[in-house]
Image (cartoon, rainbow, N blue to C red; front, side, top):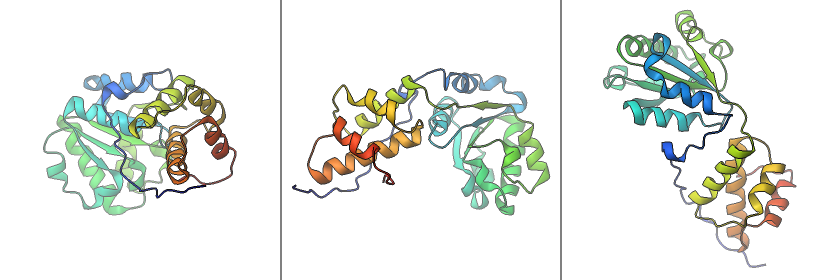
Length: 226
């Protein structure tokens, strides 16, 4: 079989509101984001598994509010006054600050500045009580924040995400592929991204189209996707 070189080219992933497919799995979290002006204590936590849509929601909120976006792991070295100058801030993967004294202190400082006059969005895979925070004042403030959850994707959401992922890669797929994948793959948006990336890579390397048979070959293997 002829094998082609598969170049690791960047894939354009968009986080526009019009690209966010609403389903029962994520509608409550989206409603919480839309109602940000009424957040108690001017803050909200969005909790959900990796790849569940937290980053998309954070970008939607940033587009609405002009918020700055920062990852928890970057807070230790962040210029907090500059980061909070515009007002609202979204901290993604916030649990990564746990155990890092500088990051926890920076998060505490950021929290106090932002919640006094703007709004703070925090995303994480688990509630703050499970992060292992060592700064009691930060832990108490985050555990007192309102929390909304992103559930595991239902069939409609998983189907829509697969369609978008293939579209982002400019891959045209047969109509029977999406239903086949939804019934057999791991039910997570992270798994959807990995599987689509794997299908794209194998199809390019082998010079064949993305088909149901190719999906069956990959889903049936006990392999780590790219």
